[in-house]
Each structure stands twice: as structure tokens, then as C-alpha cells.
Length: 331
Length: 172
Image (cartoon, rainbow over all chains, first blue to last red):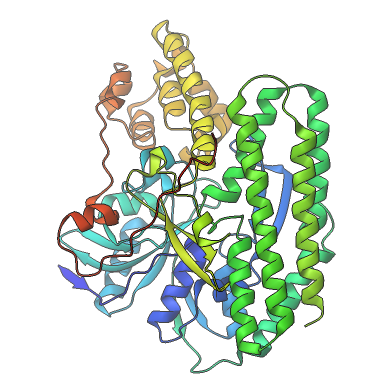
């Protein structure tokens, strides 16, 4: 059995936006990853203490998993065919069927079960997205957007990855764009998407949006009083992991969003968007500075960490971001 | 972040893989740049791993004394806690917590043992009898197709531009 679709692999910053961008391009609609990310209004900040993963509160720099797909669907009028399964045999038959018909598809998988991931990174993380573009001798050909090149994976491993249990279990989730509009009124769509982001980042109550950032900064400052240096270090490590490690293109998606604003500025010929892009880059740099400060605190291992400084840097992230959104209000 | 500021720290767990970072070129235009990693990522990942390794080592001794079940040891080695393991097993947490006790483990059904072995990615005969050494036999090399460096060792049609290494590491 061999069905391999001619598909161009590209290297992206993030899995979900990368998969959506690649699937749309294959379907005849060429949008960059940053454009997909921006149009889905995917940038966010959320600190949800009562929703715990691996014994740590949820900290997110983007909207919920799968919502980039649904966001793009709503915004662009692209209809995605989506499906989940109960039975992994059925899911695999369908996957082969898709490939037979020449259809590349996106899959939701668990990083824990992907053998090509470095073993250090195989945590129970159920929302990794990848593309399957072929099957050959019982192996599926995978275009994983956060890796530089395509790779193959045994059918059994892919089945495990698609049917991992737990938080946000994929249940074999498979998707592909069905109807792609021939042309888009990008200026209008960009304005809508930006307006939605402004609403989410500026009008959300803490612990969401920019208010959430300063709220968390205060929380970190107060952690210093408890004197549990070990927990504080684990917490900061967890936060930076969400920001840098899980494939954000750097700076907790802020650089990717700045890239979207830059592209939008060129399309609309808007100087304000260009300025907002530069401001957002500054915000990303600020987040990187914060991450570096956290890593230094963690590296030291002992003693009371200087949380005042970390909190100050974090507040600054929120302030710079707020300035960027303030500029965006004017477009 | 400017292109020349993108860290190229050759971090341990990336091996020869690279990921894509967004950065601006000299004219201020955005592009993606392959990076061999940032020291910060290495520090925070190994912090999390060490945490699990400490628990695993303490647990290994308790397994040998019969207090804990081998499942507990492999759980930590696979970077899970009882909550996450219970979710991965699709069982209530109180049941999984019981199964982490040596006494209860001894009476587990073969069906459950097999499922634990699958979820923990170890052979059944590493749980019973307990063979922690089975993990030392695991080897990993980044699949050659995933690394540009490896690909270029053979003649390749599309080499990507060489990336300058950063002079100093990000964290001294």
C-alpha cells in the first residue's frame, strides 16, 4: 500500500497555526502562519489557577487548543471537515481513505507517543498538531510543522498518539479544509480580527488579558513571602515553558503576532499597524527578558529568589503590550 | 528580536534539530529563523526533568522494599504524577493511587498490568518482575531525516543557509 501526496513541507513556529496555514496553502489559499494566527485572533494571556495540569496552574499565551481551526473557519468562511472517532481501526481506515483520495489532513496527537520527539520532550501533552500526507509500507508520512523536515511514523505509534486519554484527549481528531473561498477581503478581515483581539486583551477581567499579566505579577511578588523557594522556582519554570518551549515562535507568540501586524500594515498601507508591530516586537523582547531572569533564578537553585525584580519585568511586559494595543485602537 | 539575536545555543535535548523562531531582519521585516535552541529552554526543561528524576530515585528504593509498586517508579520516569497517570489510564485517581502501593500491585489483574505497561511504554516483564534497568537500554537518535545537519552530510538538493553560532551562551 502506497499513497504519497505531493506536499511541500515547511517549518513553522507553532503546531496548530502551522498546520492550518499548510493545509490552506495546499488547498489553494496562501496565507502565512502569522496571518493565520492573527486572523484567528489567537493571541491571548490567561492565568487559570484552578485549572491545573501536572500540578501547575494553567498559563496560556494563546486561545484554547482547536480554536485557531474554528477561528479561521468562522473568520474566513473556510469550511473544515472535522471528525473524531471512538475506534482507532476505523480512524486509521478513514485516514488511508483520505490519502487515497489525495487529501492531506491535520491530526491532533499526543507528544508522549511520537517516537521522533526527543525523549526529554515526551510529556503527556495531548494537543500537538501535525499533517499526514502519505502512507507507505505500514508507515505514515508526517509533516510536523515544528520540525525542519518530514518524518515517518509507524501506524501503531500514530494510533496511540491519536487515542491518548486525558485532558483534551484527541479522540482521533482529524480535519481538513473542504471549501476554500477563491478570494478574501483581507483588509476587512484583518480589522475584524484585530478588534476581537483588542476586546479579549483589554476588556477581559483578570486573570485574563493584559490585566491578567499584572495580576500574575502581583501574585509572583507575594509568593516571595511564603519562602518556599522550591515551589517558586518550579512555578517560574512552568511559566517560561509555556512561553518558550512548546513552540510559540518565541516570546509567547508575541513575535508571531508582530509578524502578522507587519504583514497587515503592508496590505493595508497603514503606518499605525507598522508602529503597533514594532511595539509588539518590543513586548516580545520584554517577555524574553523576563524568561531569562526566571532562568537565572532557577539556575541558582538555592536562596531566596529576587521575585520583586521578576514581578517588575512581568509588569513591564503587560505595559508594553498595552501600549501596542492602544496603537491598534487607532486603526 | 533581531536575526542576530536569535539564540543558537546548541541545547542538549535538541541534538541536531532546530526549531523556527520569528525575528526581524536589518530592514525590520519579519522572517523565521531556524534556531539550535536557547539556554533558557534547556534550564527550564531539565529543572522539570530533575524534579521527576529525584522522585523516581526515591521511589525505586521504596519499590525494592516492597512499599511502592513498580508502576510508581515508571510513572515518575515517564514524567507523570498520579493525576496524569490516572487520566492517561482512564481510571479514577483513587484507584490508580491504590495501584501505586506494593501490596495492591501484587494482586493486579493481568489485563490492568498490560494496560499499565502500554501506557508506561515498558514491556510487561519489566513491571513484573521489577526491572528498572529496562529504561537504560532505550536509545534515541534524532531520526536522520529530521536534522538539516544530517541531511547535508549527504548530498542534498536544497541546503539551507548556514546559521552563525552566538558567540557566548545566553546564561553565563
